[in-house]
Length: 199
Image: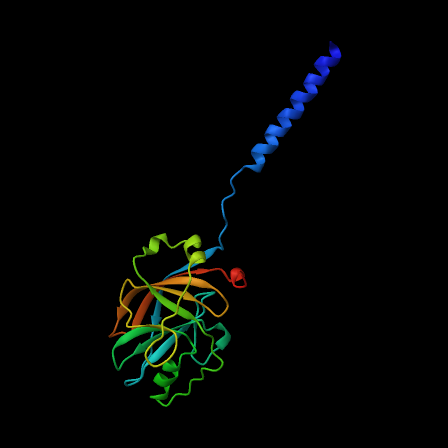
């Protein structure tokens, strides 16, 4: 009788272990997405001379503004002010259009050392819902601007622009205020952190 009870105890413990193991195997694991960071309320100031057009180059990884004659490897996004037509655009730093804007004012701007970034205007998207999962799942189909290059011209307050840099970083830009007298533009940018560039 003692032997039977001993065997039943072993079977009971073994069975409990099996049940516990099967529950662990069926546990639902939530998917992980690359982390995003946000640069909020960035104000870009466009310095113009006479009727000169100008740009503000932005490093998508840090949100820093880069001088047009600065480190080309850090230029991911080019915001441009065109005083001839009086509007703002967001374009790839290697866009021929930027080179032409500068050449009108006898300023040399090289596109050969600049990176290519893709841009696409979004519609029907609430910026407050743009999270890591949304950004990771985006496919950015670039628009071509008049004058040559990737980008979106004629920006308006509230526009959402998806982008993907040459390094693979994806993000969304929300256009804030556009001041045509003081030549300032404010933007919010949600972008993946640098570590996810090589996927």
